[in-house]
Image (cartoon, rainbow, N blue to C red; front, side, top):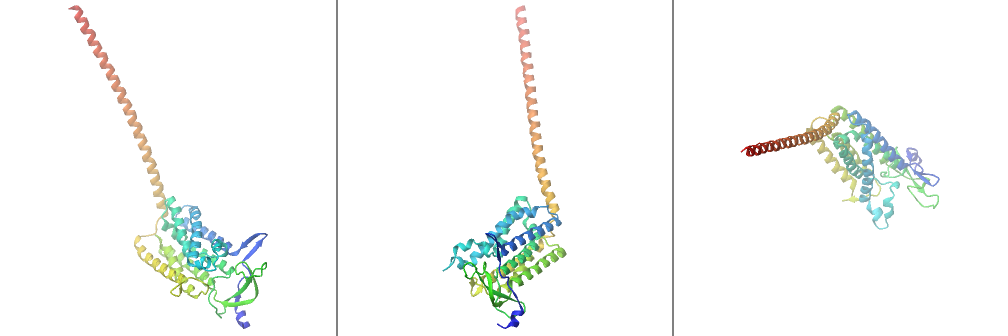
Length: 348
């Protein structure tokens, strides 16, 4: 391999896993965690700036994050099933999330279900929440791509561009066997490839900037900021996916994620067009006040109902007491008449 090509490239990290005693410290996991934290913190600030309640996004993450991780893994297994369940596959590897393999489509889809559950429990419309957290989500995706760099995965085809990525053979020192995820780089680079992880990282940062700008300028609401994020992200993912050269499920000779990106892009654009007629952005302060007023009104109605019941009971008791007195008086009157009649009979 010509030296000038190597000098015009940049290397992959020699390893992506370090051990603290018996505990493995994985760069991929750290990047995922860092991305989640960034998404929550930024989403929280945007939510409060839009009039939302403090701490709401953090509470929502308790639902969205676990759902998202499960959804991401399920999508990866569904679209790369032959690696785990095909001939010579490793079924146990399906559980080894720390070795990489989270599909963003499944993560967003099932994470959205978790967010919907959390938002519904608090009486908050999901589109308003989605608009607030959209930039944070795509920035979290950018941070997660750094984990792919450390795992030396999701790269593109062989190239001689000046920014090519060097791919090394990683070997497990204990066994001497090749191990791309847990091993340590040995010798000279095996090939130079397109750093598609870097292309997507930069694209995602651009999408985050676009969503923030458009949201501020046009006051996007009713899920439109989230739809813009989805449309912009899938537009980039479409051409980046076409550059990748790693093993993937093919449909008509094309990577399945290319079709998914195209379909989701069309859906997001359609939603953006339809949602234009839904009016201005939701006033979260008004929504919260209306909800609180509704709760107060319901409590007031309950108090009024109790008061009316008490009055009815008192009224009924009073009427009963009056009736008893009248009946007693009537009895006394009858007794008096009887005594008068008896006296008249004796005189006769």
